[in-house]
Length: 156
Picture (cartoon, rainbow, N blue to C red):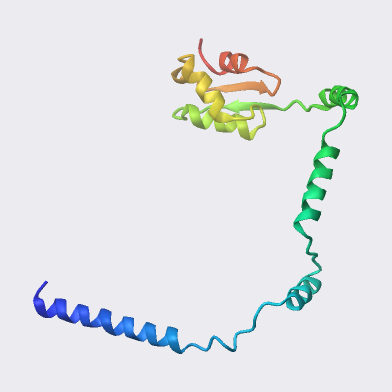
């Protein structure tokens, strides 16, 4: 860069800074409407919303947490029906040639067979089964353990 170019660049920076400073200091800040309680109330009423204080919010969240934590006798009664209602997902997992083990784990997660594909991938890697996945169709369900799934989809 030549000295003329550098001087021109510097002059441009100085001029643009002067323009920005002029706009900043001459802007009309006195006529800006201040936010008032009445304006907030009007806005909330137009939107059909409600403002509450921090104390009211804290009280509501505490009440909600108490209601969400049932007593131990109620908890025991509720856990048994949930197990009966637990849905078992089944799928035919078709593994094609060239699919990565991560893709297979993602398919299992999408089919609700496993909850976390990364955990199953870690299981396969820790048991040296990552490269043993067979390219074919497999019948799997959500009641299968990681060990059972691994035996189904691998050649071991």
